[in-house]
Image 1 (cartoon, rainbow, N blue to C red):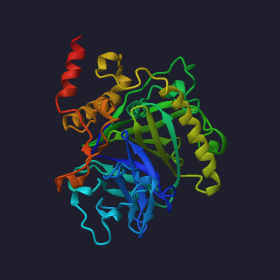
Image 2: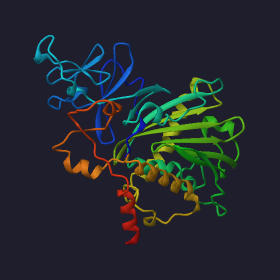
Image 3: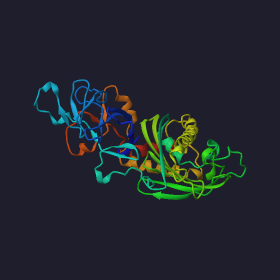
Length: 380
């Protein structure tokens, strides 16, 4: 899991008048709206005695810890310590980590890292959002599995024939093959591909958009380590552009948010069917992802036999290595070994501006450590 990327923390609707406890990257956060309705995200651990801020109340622009009533604003600054009395001086070191927030596409994103604003990767763009001739649906669900494995599933053109009966023919087509991939790079945060394949007619309410089996163009790619775009063009008139935003809860559980934009059947009466069909397909992927072995992506590609259809998956893994080299990968083994004694925080941008923090920064794998491990395993 990586710091320094945007992660979806909640839907806009979920974030109402109460604080929300959200787990991401193996750590807990509190997300709440201040008095002006602006979404805020803080590390969840109170710097006094470790209380869970999400269990407290929203007081004006602050979240109040339920343990001793300390109040923290959206910048992470402590504004009140009741035990000091009215007007008591509040030490700067009481601050908690506060994370940049963007609210868009019906989702609340938090930037979980310490990069300054000009160096942060953007949230994956949804170009159709708000444009005439497109209608969105948004759904979210939690699955058991590793998010890298899930992202790679989205980048895998070969699984559709066998996993999805709406995308392929169950492996019964003797002429089946993965046709040439047309690579599409979107530096510096991702890449993808387009390809053409044989697909069955569309089912149900969307059947009018594609009545016969035949060739169909599909494109897919990743943005950062945790976002995937998939563009499905069943016909010139009917396009589905899907955007999957993933939040690793930890190494073995994922919260997924699927935004689907469609170019036809724009009446709201079709929304429920769109959501039902998307979930039907997603559940087929879940069956596969939750049983993959090993649970985590192997440390070296030699542990799996890769073929040309896996080209973009390999490109994704190369991107992960680039972010390893930046020192952005969390050392989950060390976190697990020390979690009962140490409360960690994902470093926020504030740590570049201020010295003196109560919570330790979450340990990360030093640049070069992962490469050395890969080399050793490959040699063995």
